[in-house]
Amino acid sequence: MQTTVFPVHRVAVISTRPFDEVVRRFTATIGRPDMIQFRSALASARTIADLRPVVDAAVGASGLMEFARFDAGEVLRTEPGGDGNRLLRLVIGNPLIMKEMARIVPDAASYAPVTILIDERTDSVQLSYDTMASQLAPYGNQPALAVANDLDAKIVSLLEAAAR
Image (cartoon, rainbow, N blue to C red; front, top):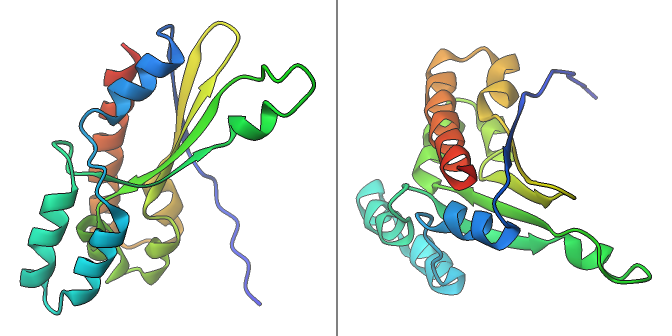
């Protein structure tokens, strides 16, 4: 068994906007395809030429799509009083971006698509993201890191836009 320990860089952006508004602003440019249809079309693609229009139809203006949404706060609201802060985990990405990283660093598929946590605090909303570049850094592959850095810049830009 091999274990590698490496630091992960977490980006956190704080907003004073209401939780629902932050979520709406963050997801405004992210595609939300019908995942059953998307997976079926993805499975039918045999070449990159087949795959590209499937992905292009699924992503939003940001070039990203939502794969899953988990309302982690739902569990917190089962506590007595049921008024826990809201926590939303979004799994977002682009299969073509993941492909570019995973074809040269297969472990990249462990980290993509990425997770965004939108966390309602007492006086703010925090958007958090663990950077792809920090997760791929131990592999030392510059082409994969270049793709990861581009992805990180895109996501950080979305976080900042949602917060302001």
